[in-house]
Image (cartoon, rainbow, N blue to C red):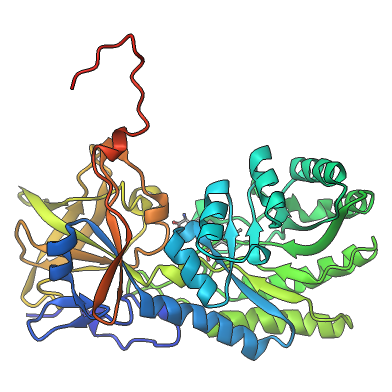
Length: 457
Ligand code: LLP
């Protein structure tokens, strides 16, 4: 019988994990079963239960090092890769990226606090958001974290704050460069019709307004054009646009010496995905900035980029246990698992595709079945895979879904009052908890029953 799960036999790209479907340390043991980070997945589930998020430390560090190395190789000026923590925010992730020399991008007080407590130095954190609260802005300023101004409302409040503190504040501004790229409508952010940042046509007025403030110092510009991008041209164009914006700002007396080109590099979720490598992506943007600076006789600004997905997605897998089956003759067989849209909302939100296999039969020997993998939530659309080839399987067996490290845990919910899974870190045969499993009673923690209602015990 044909082996259908050939992605497990593909050659691993050791230098650019985003080009693999599976974590680098994925292997199939002598017993034919799946392991990651030197840990048997079956054993992990026996100990920690399912569903289970697992992150592979080796793959994570490889991804970080690939960005660091490429920036050092291709960019002659100063550089700083910044981890976009919305992809997967935790004390652990903050600590890991910081230990690899990364900064961190946060978009809320929660992400800021997680970064600080996780050990990211404040001078390496940037604070984004299209509707920051007063409290969040004050938190950032009090902690000497650089705010990326997204709109006039941010600017007004920062000006007031700097005046009341009688203190200079360095700021960056975010603008939309008007670059279209081919990705899902919801994750496209750099085109003109976007809720984020200043339209590029508004920049001259903005430069004049900032020049007229007493304490705001414009040191940098930022743009992010979208996520899960496979093309290199948009970032090539962005490099040139960034340099042109620096030149326009100069005319208003601003010396911009930092550019942040956002994130967006795609990853391989399924066999048809073919993203560029981290090296190629960094080379494209670096060459574009260098060329434009040289043409315009400009010093190289500090180059920052903000990868999220390409740092953490491929390092992550999710393990589910199979429960009920429902066969609709001539149509499909539903196989239900013990998680779904609450731990991975991406299929229902973006119709995203993933790759998966059985933990006990990863190469899918004797594959002769097509299944629809459904989640356990009360929603017909809670389907993780519309159709997947798997070996004939039964209740109690485990399924491993690959590429779930980014925008799964961070976008998870408690829909249907389903507790969030535990998250483990695996490395060299050891597994450590990085997020405890929620329990149903944890979910009651913030419910309040007013006294006049009768409490049942
Ligand atoms: N910087 C900024 C300002 C961003 O808005 C984002 C992502 C990034 C960096 C990181 O982009 P990445 O390298 O991860 O592509 N929830 C969606 C993705 C939303 C991305 C939002 N912004 C998903 O699950 O596909």
